[in-house]
Image 1 (tube, rainbow, N blue to C red):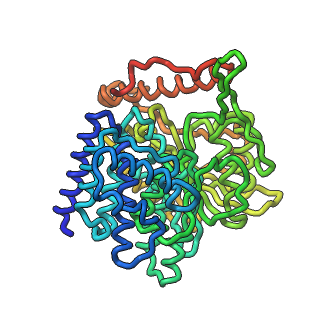
Image 2 (cartoon, rainbow, N blue to C red):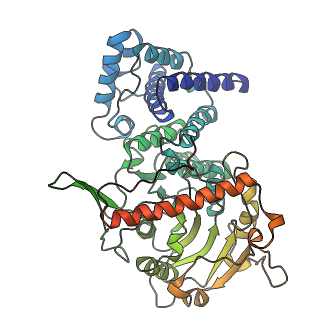
Length: 507
C-alpha cells in the first residue's frame, strides 16, 4: 500500500470522527466504537484466510453486515454484551462495552467505512499510526481527561533507548495507559536485534505485561498492542484490568517502564447515613512496602520495587516533584531507594510537555539489588532539562531531538564509571552533574529535588520567554497549587470533591 492510500484512509477516519463529534460523540467515545468494530473486522479477515477465531459466528463481523436501523442497533449492543463476558484478550477489549452512537444510520455508515478497507492488508505501522493518532487526539480532548494516560512519545522513546530492553526479558508497565512504553520496548528489541523464531514468539506473546485500572483505557491499550501484532495468539490478555497497588503480584520482571497517574491520593468515596457524599483518603498497607501512605505516587514507587527481579531488575519511572521532597513516607521511600537500589540517574523534566496541566515531573532510573549493610547507591547523576527551557504542547512541543544530549550523557550500555559531568565551576551552565550518596543522605529529609542552574528569567528581564509561554507557565503553576488545595480539602473531609472554577482552562 502506498503512503498516499494510507493517508487517504487516515483522512476518511478523521472526517467521520468530526461528523460524530457534531452529534456529541467525543474522541474517546469514537475511539471506543472504532476499537470494537476494528477488532471484529480484523478478526473476520484473519478467519477468512484460515486463522483461528474465538468469536462465535453469532457475534462476528459478518453478523452485522445485513442489518440496519433498530435491528443493527439491537444486535450491536448484544455483541458488545456477549463478547465482554469471561476473561482473556477479547473480554478485556469488550469489558463493560456500550454503544455510544445513538443514531443507527451513523453506526451503519461507520460499519461501511471500516468494511471498505482490508485492514490486515495494511502495513502494521500504518494501522498503528492511525490508532496512535486517534489516541493522541483523545488525549488532547481536555473534557475527556484522557491526557493523564498519554505520556509524550519522545520521552518514552528516550527512556526506552537508555534502558535498552533485550531479547528474552520480561517487561512490565503497572500503569499501562494506552501501552506506549510496552510498544516502544517491543519496537526497540525487534529493531536492535536479529531474533530467531523462539525469541520472536517470546517477544510477541510473553515478554510484555501490564495493569490498567480503568476499563476504557485498558481496552484502548489492548487494541493498540493488537494493532502492533502483540498478543495475537495469546490465550490471556497481556493487560490485567485491576488495581496494581491492591496486593502483591507474586511475579517479577527484568524491566519496568511506567508513568503512574499524577495528582491523586488513594481514596474511597462513600455515602453517609445523611446522604452526604464524602471522600476519604485510603492508606495502602502492604507487608512488602517500606511505608504505609495514601500518596499514590509513593505507593507506585514501592510497588515497582517489588516487581523487579532482585539482582539487576531495573526501572525507569516518571514521578511528580513531590516524590523527591515530600516528608514522612516520602523520606522513608527515598532513603530506602538509596540504600536498597542503585538509584543512579534522575532526569528533571521540563514543564509544558504533558496534556494534564500543572505537571512538574522527573524520571527515576534505578536497579534493584540484594540486601546488604552498605548502600547500593554510590552516586546519583542529575540532568536538568527544565531550567531555562520552555515547551508548549502546540507552539513548541517536545521532540526526540530535545533529549539527545541527555541520552548522550547517560551513555546507555556503558559502565556508570565512564560518565563525565558537563557542569563544573568553569562551566556553571552544565546540565549534567552528580552527587554522592553521603551528600544526598545528609540533605534535609534526603531531599532529591536538586537544581543548580541560574534561572535567567529571575535575573534578566531581557531573557524572558515569549508572553504566551509565560502565560502558560503561570497557568501550570496555578493548576498545581489548586490540585494541592483539592487534596487538602479532601483530607479535611469536604462533602464533595473540591472544585475550583477555572478561568484559565483551555476551551
